Image 1 (tube, one colour):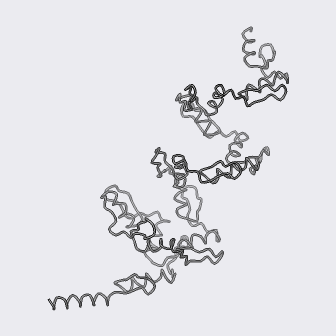
Image 2 (cartoon, rainbow, N blue to C red; image 1 turned 45 degrees about the vertical axis):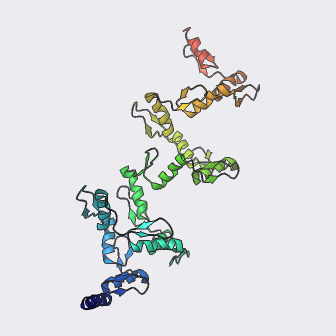
Image 3 (tube, rainbow, N blue to C red; image 1 turned 90 degrees about the vertical axis):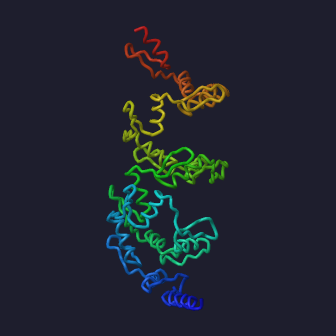
Length: 381
């Protein structure tokens, strides 16, 4: 028993001698070379430089792995489905989907519910809770939890955009921004709404969409109290109160409160109609016009009147119809004070006062204020 205990103690002592402790943190390494590589994290030393984008790295293997971003090389293949990956770590993580195996080691954050497969990742995450930001930008003084975050931030000052799209040549300062952009070309929409199944190319777009289901509206108008799920929607709404119209049409000078409204308006001048109906090849200037038109083919009438059950193709048609139940007549004639439930009816009525007769008979030239009167007259010919 004593000899076994002595042998065990000697083995423990021998292992301890072979252990190399990091003087800056709790990490222990069996080989001195591994400790030397690790120490570069603390010293900030990055001797390996990328010839394509100038990115610097503390390890040669990390640089080699980074190079694959530029070359597109994915040397690690999944035996089950053939999908390829840039790193062995990505492949191992992917293979767990087939095997159902969970990560062997998981490191739990004591402050929140997040779990990390590596201790180093947990340590970086913990800085969020401790508020530790050891990496400072010399240009503006902003601080960051990781050196990578600082490197990405510094590109806002240098204007460097090392990541280029192979399809259109557009360049980006962040790799994740490039990947998100590439989905425009591939049409990939990996983010699915669990409530309705609609898919999105951007995670942020999914989050905004999900507020439709939750009813969550963080942004409130100070003037009228109306709430919005998006900050840009609130900003656009506030222009109703301020009357601000910052977007000008270069062709006619008309101004608009929203950029998308200006872009739609510009199609009047360009004649552009980018939305095509697959059934009849008719073209439209807006996606909304196309959707309304497609209901002619599908027969879809998604807007229901709660009073009589009648259905309509558009929300505008439903609003006009509901006035038959409410008796609302919001359109007034400035000449005689008569009111109408529809704008088109008011415009027709005003011709009594103006004497305008826009409908002419092609046979005899006689003109009429109402299209229905012209049709009745044309039966004579």
